[in-house]
Image: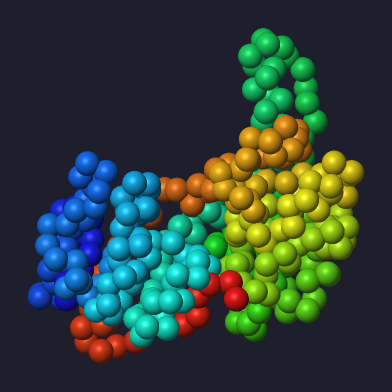
Length: 325
């Protein structure tokens, strides 16, 4: 199989890829004087490995994406991301190409981010740091996560790992998802029709669901008013799962206590957004999932799937429907 892949992928994983498919050959894209260049004819490509490094190199990404989506002979596109809410992915599927994602590769890192935000809410880390800088010695009250309720909307790979870590802190866990698949470490699994109950009972509401037609705008004014005034909303899903103007009102007027946000309706978050200046908001620039271990996890999925494709077996993490609609 002829695979579009970066030089890093070829150099680091080329041997393992050829072990999965002895006939594998690589077509490497690069940026030369602001233009896209290839070391072989991209029109012959059958597969694309959209790896982490291609995602992170902005100029390369912006040039490669439109180019590979025009490749008529493409049979398989593997993306580093778990989210496939971009409508362009559905175009590939409609053309008969196989789409697979790297769901689960960044789950450990994102789940640890979620627990870090919970701990930062329970323990006065920022206040202790300020006192240290001021050389001030004063006892500050703090809480703990024991006995608190963690409500997780979307208990797939990320939500499931959040539940596992939350149980290590003796938290109660409630999960909500569209399917009735049992999730380990979730004390009570609810259907999405019982979302109101999850919101009302949770001290931390974690959004880890994909962006779909059903989840876009899922958390609006009504849902935020159902939450406890002491509750914290943590969003590691997509920004459009939350109605941002309603969230701003909720944080200003005390419907909820705080929000920890890694994703936003518009990214980068505009400088004029009120969220930047809110003391009860923690902002990170959509990189809660970053980890030096992610590349290996995602590439292991790609290499396993390459072997499955060669053998004519069902592929792992295959996406049958992409986009939001």
